[in-house]
Image (cartoon, rainbow, N blue to C red):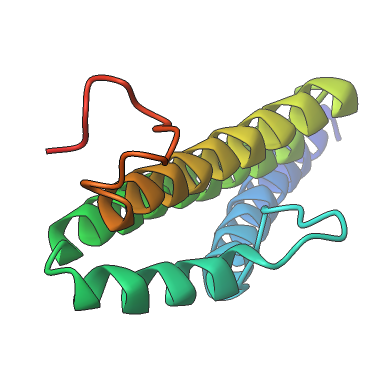
Length: 145
């Protein structure tokens, strides 16, 4: 009877491990297929609309490389957030306690960094558009070229 319990217990343990593996696999699949936008707009023009406007303004001035560099940087930040989200999901499933305040701070910081990148691109474009204007107060005193 004791032998049977061990065999049954070992079988139950392997079933639990298999169930956890299936749950983790399912969570990773769901997370990878679910689109997320971590940018908080807070009543301002959405970042995608601002980027489209900047792209059209920069295309007219032959400075599309500035726009592409900024878009690639924003994409890298989104990829980092996605990777972090997947990692935290796996950690939570495995039993590690996730501190919600730290997660909120992480995503708020990423949103602020993205906002600052777009704002800097807007300032740079304003300086490019007013190049040679004596009455314009430059955002970047060292120039944009």
